[in-house]
Length: 445
Image: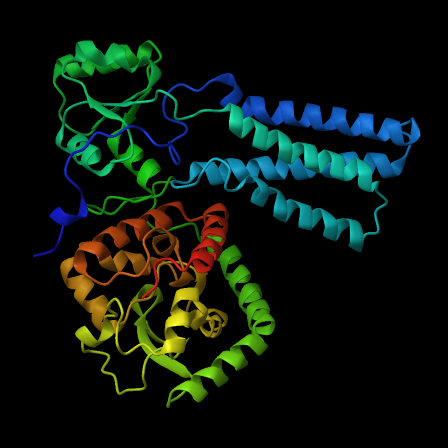
């Protein structure tokens, strides 16, 4: 019998004080200062004014000097790109208010620097950095002024799906409504209902009345995805265009990024990889590299490369227990433990990426025996093979390494969220969070 929803996956019902609306800032009513259509124009006006003042102090005529004009245009372009990037990051569950503000400015600034250097565009350092610095400061200040978590509550219409949601959202304030008459309580929060279940006529009329009077009402499925970053796997879930297969147009861009990124990585890490290989050979007998059969894109097996982190041994691809890595596994060598905690053991998989067997970002490829086991016990497990497996992924930065069925059930929900929402923004966010995971040694075995 396939595993649908293990009891141990969700904790018992709890109602705790709200600790943040990371992925759900759009739920409920928002003040004007929180709206993107207000934030961006205000930012651009202020940046332009500050740069004009700085240019005037420099030479008295801010718009007759090409250096000043180029600097103003460049800073405005960077601020637009940064705010757009930050806005996309904030849509993703688990992102904190301040974590990606400065990061959002990083890539646009590098692009601008490249344009200025390659095309030798004249610019003013003072005017340019005044615009960039003020823009970043304004976004940080705005983050302090905004308080998206203040007083917001999820008001739940009784039902099996909303009960499951309440059990899972242990860090949100939730309150069940006892009757349609209480829908008026949700003026400063949001109503969540299972809109696919058979609601009584009283509840249907009450919800319609609430919507007419400006109260936000959301389907439980969307709320769960927006807050947890997981997709329910009781049925295959389509993307925003109603298709089960992710965007093929982005697949082309993603593959080009993989080729360029893996080539750059192999060149950049060539010497560190040689040193790691040498250290492995000197500290334990056996090859420096470990080749392992994994299930890949569209279910095709492939040979994945890693640095060897365990004692050299004969291994059976079909032996289930030998494929699992336990906490403090005695087979792991001292240097292997370091490589696993820092994720440096994954570097040789850049070769798999270059060969087209893997991607830089995607669901992790599982050993053949584990993949077969999961497929037998978890509904729709095979669907995760609709995209190329990755060196890192959404499940890895949220959950870490797991092998048991209950944990893999949760991991599969993260994988489905990635497949449903695959985009350049999500890939960039995963890459940034992967760096944080490597620095803090989280989730490894």
